[in-house]
Amino acid sequence: MLDGNNTKKTDYSTTGIITKKEEEPTVKLVASAKADARNNRDQPAPSDGVDGQKTTGEGNEESGVASGKASKKDDGSNDDAAAEAWIARAVLKVQWTDQEDSIVIDAVTNSSEQPFRLWHDLAQRLPGRVGPQIMVRWRNQLNPNINHLPFSREDDLLLWEGHKKLGNRWVEISEKCFNSTRSERHIQNRWNSVSFKKFISTKDSLIETVR
Image (cartoon, rainbow, N blue to C red; front, side, top):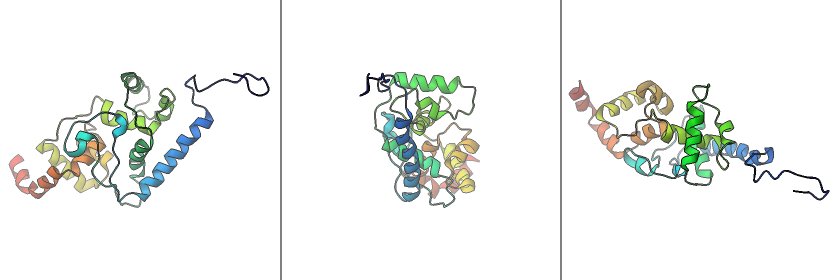
């Protein structure tokens, strides 16, 4: 197109290229989301409805809602994880397409960087998506190593022991107790579920049964 000086300008709205001007709101969104995560630690984690489809599992996982509350720790260790959820809520909730999922799966599985961290770069191939949103989609839905089945009694024991040692560090619990086969979102949802609370009240007898 031509500007007022008859100089040809590229219309980036049709090319799918993210310009610096378009990128600025995303940067501000990330900073704002981290601030919201710190200021709203007493609030329930927002819905993961940005995925546009239901998840399987225990408790509120059926609707993709994290029913727990963010950690009140002041060391900022959970700010990034909490920010992911707040970013996902702030972004327009559009259902993920098969084509988008294919792009994410192909990019992550074929990348030479493992574990994959190039979420911002990948977002440039997915107009309308931001890096943290894509990361949440991969971690909770697309990662083929994630077990989406309901938690077993043995899983609950692992979660209880892991939380006793690591507290609300859900990512570490996922890695150290479940070999990353359970996402941090699934683990947090299970910990805050009513059925798990009932398990805790009877865990001593269950531990003896398992042993």
